[in-house]
Image (cartoon, rainbow, N blue to C red; front, side, top):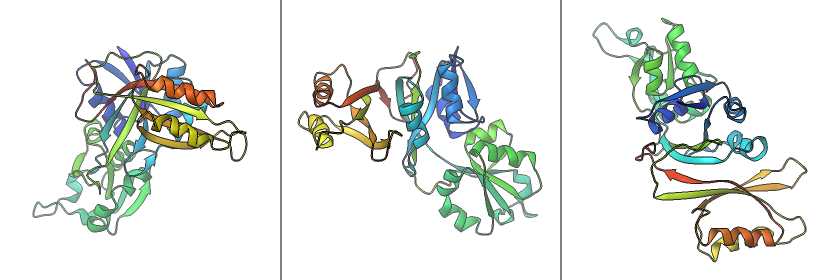
Length: 293
């Protein structure tokens, strides 16, 4: 049974995404307090793979995850997939039922959740919980757990449906996320590749360091992909941490290293003095695809 490390505690969106992706095959999901702790467990072979969020539709890149891949570890990317970040209002329903049997959310005094989850639900909060105090927790699941442990206080949390099951709470309002297209992209990293179904799409992620004495190097890097009609789905600069003005370029490429054109593009940019590190060449899955065989 494979051991999968994820950002905990149990009941986070990352945990929910892991359950979805690996449905149908037994796995042991192990929560860690920080993304760095989860990844460190895989480096130490305490777990087989780590699941890390890398990008969100609303909030953008998860820079902690990118910096771990760039600076912290040498673990190849084995797969990626999208998962909808659906947030829900969670609490103990009995606290909010009126004498006539209706649900009265105006009784909610305080809402707990991770800062990014609260930010994704502000339209609902303003409309239905305008007087509720907002308090940040270390994760969405931690907020749900706190609500469960403190009944009759008028507390509610924003979190996943999985969290309601794990912490025996109630769904007060489903899918309160402001944007219906709110997805998070996850990476599966580690030295032990899982057995996955074939995907219609492959991606390759590279890290490029430009030569300092080569004017227009970034333009030439992009040109090496452009004239070959290779699609770059993401390019992001991250500091090398060596000196001011020195950057890596984190680049997601649509295509596999087994293709005809991509190795040639990499060779071309290496020829002008760029350092290229391949972080992985891997299958990419959409939410509609469960990838485990």
